[in-house]
Length: 496
Picture 1: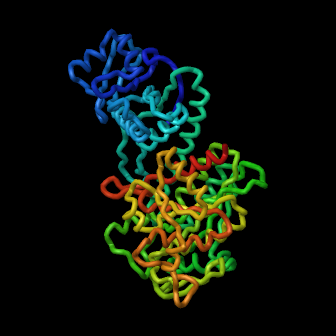
Picture 2: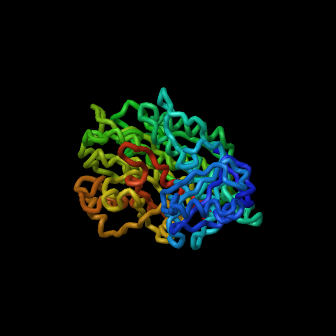
Picture 3: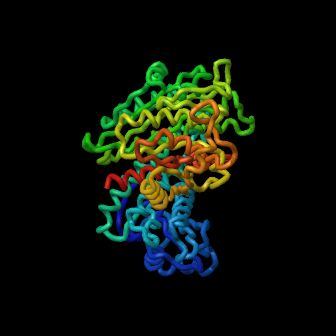
């Protein structure tokens, strides 16, 4: 998709379609008023006859509007003007893009980016609009032999700012939005690919390709023999049941001075999770290809950072494995030694994400990190606690947690903090090893984070449990690309 930014009156736009808003009670937006004036009340008369009320979700396509150079005018219902907040704005933009795509217009000029939202400037509105446009038009059909082709696909969208004075900020916002949208698409594509395509080796190949695309990236992949030498017994305990070898992928982005400590992102990438010997139920097991969404989100974030050329250092660490039951798989009760030297009794082989993350978190120490943030589809318990709306956040450093929460609010990719109290640590006690890999039914998300915290004591660390937010189920199932938007907002804030 091609995006542009411009200022100017709607009646002067030479385009296939101009998009403007109508509020509830049949009130015209500022851009709609300009069209109404040039068309001698054409819009007012239509609305007065009841063709449109301005309710959210409504739209009306008009052809040959008097006084307009544009071929079409698309009216979008925006609901009550006073109730347009960040969430409603995103919905309005999404509705406008989907409606525009259905008109057969090859391009359009969208004036909804000028809607007033308390506390949000034009930079925020433009960046969000670009991300939402790409997200709304996303399709994953690369493995279909017969693709559902749009006869006249939308190719260019122009978002507007009120005056030329806002154009420079609008251009920056557009670039950021496009890079983040590309990163989200990268994440969704990786996650949506089936596990017979997207294997640990495939992810390593994707990292190499990304390194060739961006000279600012340095790529390194450790093989199982390398990990064994480093003492990563915990990570290798997960992959030992699979014929597909594990990989530990690192992507170093160097955008600042070498002395600047990097942000390290650790992404869980279990390319398929059967549960191992603790086999999962068969229902919806196909969705376990999404157990690599944490790793996929690190790919998307690193890609966006490199595309923008941000003045900051960021490292992505991705432990990639497949968790399978076989004669060589880990048995419940087996004990392994992690890279940190701590021993782990594996009581449930379906709690494997923490077993690969703990070694990756220990490995991250070599980068002398400013902070470490791990991202993982880790627990079903977080879905019970927070549903599909918020990512679970736990941290050993409250200022880091607050920065991530604020980034989530600003980006619309929200998180919710859960406690990481020492009271929960005792649930991980084992009579035979330093710890067990599960802590029972109670507070499953918290005890999983408690487990990881034991490997992150040397630096500020946060854990994002995205098991509820990384994908959606049902007839329209697919990866969401979260939390790339949250991570990018955090990194942008740090870069500034």
